[in-house]
Length: 365
Image (cartoon, rainbow, N blue to C red):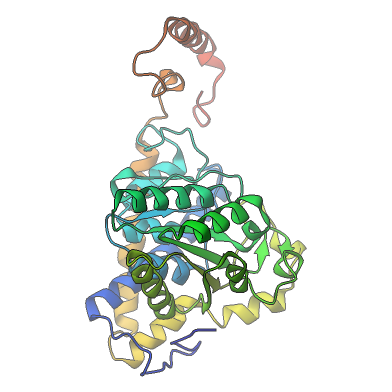
């Protein structure tokens, strides 16, 4: 398994990519922002201020590291657990928080589940809940780019559970046959909700599955952000140069629940969680920065306060925004609303007005 930085922050100097200090600190900042956002959003969900949340604690290095080497014209096809990828691509924090609240300022206008966000301005495609459906889409987009002669790479995220889906086979097979410029990024976080990786496949690794489709598979320490950057950069260079796809198995761990509706203590041992906590990607990268004398505890405290303040302000703005207007149920499908839908909309609006006294302000229609 490819690794540059050990759990205690020590590193292999021969493998260290020696990124510019500004980039290293921005990577750390984004990873810590994801962790802080996770904690705040889960707290809001428990308070009943948002309806649902999918945390990604423990997987920050996979997401930020894999997205780091991409160019603006490249495309990301996420699942529903990739806020680090979204933020690194330039997805505004405020837009993410609006989406968690599903308010009128949400780019999806409240039509998607929380954590199902997309943004055309940063080539970040909205995911859907069914597992693995984004994989063939990413391959198709990559093939289209190849046909046009564009030097575009598509990066598709999925978990270990998705490797048991038919869409995984379809996407991998198509990419192998047509040598599409696709990076398959499997975040092997050991659990597909409550199903352990050992019950997903008899294969020794997930990376080895790429061999059956005729292309390279690599196994990377997904809690080592520098290893993730280096492995994904090599895959992107190869794809952009016509060398075809790569499957990257990022070995990591989902530290929290699958979602705010899950209780992981019912199916996984506490000792396993504690073992992975000692491999935490943020403390590992922080140790690396400290050993290179680029960071200290004073810097860390100041950054944490800055991120807390940013998230607090984003929450304040999102809670002030109104819910989506009733008529948005009917808009954005046709360029011009057809008569039968216009009639339905008018009746729906009248019904909404009649029922308004019965509706709670907390859960508006």
